[in-house]
Length: 292
Image (cartoon, rainbow, N blue to C red; front, side):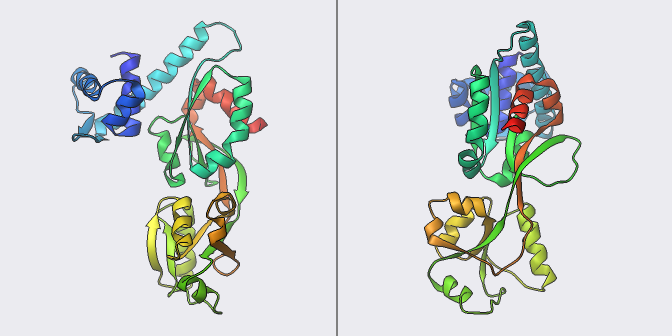
């Protein structure tokens, strides 16, 4: 068992796909499979349940992922310590953000960070914001996420902005006509809702408090997907104002004042406390988020 194999396993645990992992690690899929098989033989447990292309971590695999992340972080720290007292940091920083966040929030922070630490390779993965926190358990160093202001001993959070949540309707079509027709019967309005997360919980609470049985057209994991369905005239959605303003679909939707008054969308950076403690690179980035 070596660092290269541990990094391979971490990458596979993040992708859960042999093809993507082989491309990222510059190995053939068969080589990836053989390396994982050897690792499982060494440990004496199955780490993954897999079919021809995809994979899922077993319970033992999840435990081993925690170990692999810890060992790799400590190895990287050891390498930096052995380099002496040089202020030049080398290594890799992995980030996860939604498309909107990667375009509107990250550029300033990353620009400053890159100028200060040009030898650090930045690996950026984009996806649905609702999945951000779970990415930390898959090995991502820092995520940009919608953050609750609750206490979690395992996580460190830095909220950098609060964005109003707005009720968004299509500019034309049947849904637009119904919404603009006067008093809104929310039980009749098709809603495009996030599949999970704080916004979904707040909308559900608003509906429940008013004894409104929701007419749910769709449940989707990302704000950008919600906005797309609203623009198509499928229903009414509730998304952060920043997402609307930065979207190429902004001319196809309208933000209205009617609808629930929802708590602002708190956005910021999040990392695992133990990773922040052992990784000089993560600490350097964390400092950059404060200064930017």
